[in-house]
Length: 200
Image (cartoon, rainbow, N blue to C red):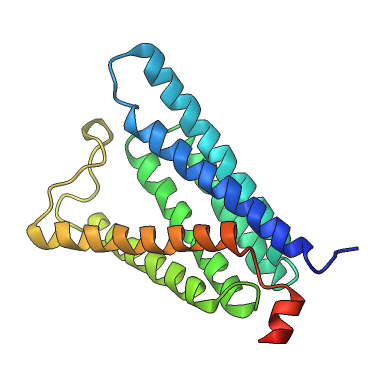
């Protein structure tokens, strides 16, 4: 039987794994192009461990939100798993870009679940949805730009105009604000338990 404070513990656990995912992703990305073979291999290990952490985050949040909307919770978990499955065998080129779409898409059901529940302030759900929308618009702009997506051997970078640079910066700024603010809330507050909602 679930106690009133158990959802708060589950949410904080998701926050811990979310923080681990962010740290490992930063480490994996920072050293992936180094000439040192050992460091490069450690970078790959950090990246794969980061994927595993994100899957644990999605599974933990599924447990938290499945009673709010089981289908949305399942979609959130499926999008996260698909992103990891695509990115794992293709760490460069189109595979990385396509998997990023699923990284963003998993935020849509998560945002909707937050909006529908009273567990987390709805502001975070709206912010996640806006961040995902910005990124999908950016992906569409790159997809239909002159020349289309870059070739795999050229890497994911494309030439950007000054407007494109600003737009890309806005997209990532919204994502960082959305995900880090949600992370901070999960770690510090967890979720609103019944007593909190009754008091408000």
